[in-house]
Each structure stands twice: as structure tokens, then as C-alpha cells.
Amino acid sequence: MATYLVGDLQGCYSELKALLKQVNFNIHNDLLYLAGDLVARGPDSLKTLQFVKSLGPRAKIVLGNHDLHLLAVHAGIKKVKESDKLTALLNSPDADELINWLAQQPLLQKIITENGDTAFMTHAGISPEWALNDAIKAAEDVHRKLISAQKDNWLALMYGEQPNSWKKAHSDIEKFRYSINALTRMRFCFTDGSLEFDYKDSPDNAPKDIIPWFELSKVIDNTQWVFGHWASLMGNCSHSNIYPLDTGCVWGNHLSMLRWQDKKIFIEEYQHVNSNKNEQNKNKLGNIKQTRTDDKKNNSK
Ligand SMILES: [Mn+2]
Figure (spheres, rainbow, N blue to C red):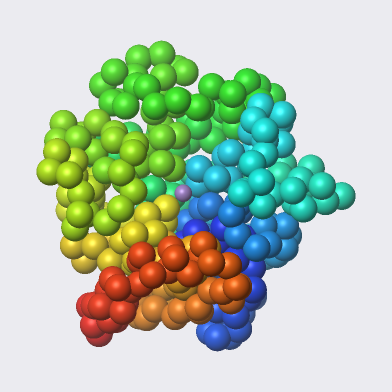
């Protein structure tokens, strides 16, 4: 039995299928963990959702910001943007079934392998203001609201960036919004641990007053954490026990799959390279790609 982990699919269905073929994924024995953002922006969100749902209990996912946005669009709270490429999914006869299934998924997964090796997975990471149990409880609270009869009311309340600190989140609504932002949108924080929402580039070029969440969280000193969402990290960061999985496939780079048991990384290049925009994005990220992939491979030996 092997445990595989993949970052943001964002509709990159053919690349996921190619990765599973590459490792001879066995649906009866293996597990596939997906770090959220299954849909949006990429070539085939519909097939991606249909396929992941068809894996049943062999696929373990967490919700990302794009998944939550899809729930809001489907509920009529937000309008779909053309750039999200969600029209085929929303117009599909099985859209309700797929999106209702998506809404049942959690925001945090505990990964345990047969030898007792444990890790946690969320789409963005863990807030530096949270202990491990705070994160587990916050993710459960959000999940409970999203599977309740009041789901649509709660989805309408998730938008916004305040409060950006857990300390300032007093009401149920403030805690809900903060938790969603910390679990699915966070990259950088200010030095006091509060969330910064604008900067998306790699830490190398970041302004001095903001710091990656994983440089501030005490939890990750003794906890392994798996996350997606941050393509410009290109699978690398300064801590050996955290695993950034998003390597910007939808932006023209590649989809990465980590085999947990031996930490081997498998990759599939983006297969739809006929878009100028994707080529430009690839060039932007491309110069850090090779060294970081090599680094991670070296670390895993
Ligand atoms: Mn994301």
C-alpha cells in the first residue's frame, strides 16, 4: 500500500491520470490525498471532479479557496468568471451531485501511514496563531457549517479579509471567515502572525515586513504539514518537515506527486502548452523550477 499526495489540480485532469499511470496507482490498496483547489482556471474541472469522486474512499481531499468559490457560484452567491473555466462543470447534468459531494469534504486531513508516521494536510497551511488543536477545531467548525442546512448563508459570509487575526475574531461569523482565510488563502503573515493577503510571489523577493506562515508557526517544529496553494514555492521551502505540493501545473509548469512512504516525487508536465499566457507564467516560475525539484529529490534520499 502506498500513500500519494498531489497539490492543486485546478482541472488538470490528464496530468493527474498520467501521474497515476506512472506509479501504477492501485485503487484497492493505495490512497490519493489531494491538497485542494481541484477546480478552476485549468482545462477540465468537470472530468477532474467526476474522476476524484469516482475514487470514493481512496481519495482524501481538503477544500481550497477555488473549491469554496465554486460552491458559492453554484449557490448563486457569486457570478462565475470566464477565466475560471467552470461553465462546462456548472452546465453538466451531474453538476448538483458533484458540487454537493464537494461540499461534504473537510478542510483538514490527518494522514497516518501503517508505520504510524503522521502528517496533517490543509490547502494553505496552519495559522501561526493556532496550536494544532485550534486548527483541527477551526476546520471542523467550518466543515460543520458547510454541511448544514444553512450552508448557503455561511458561504455568503466567507468573503472578506477581516478580521485578519484570530485574536480579533470574536463572533461565530468572524471566526468562520478567519478560519477559511487561514486554511485556504494564507501565504504570508505580518510579524505578529496576522494574515497578509496580497503577496503571492516566492519568499526570496518578499517585502521585509511579511514572513511565510511556516517561518512563524511553532506547530510545524514537531508536526509534518502538507499543503498546496502556493505555486511560486515550486515544491520547496526551508523546513524539512513541511511539504508544499503546488508546482503550478495550471500555469504551465508541472503536476507533482509525492509518495509518502519514501518521499519520492513524480512529475507530469502541463499538457496544454498552446496558450501564450501559460508560457509567460511558466517563464516567470521556470528559473526556480529545476533547482528546487532537484533539492527536494536530494533531501529525500
Ligand atoms: Mn488556492
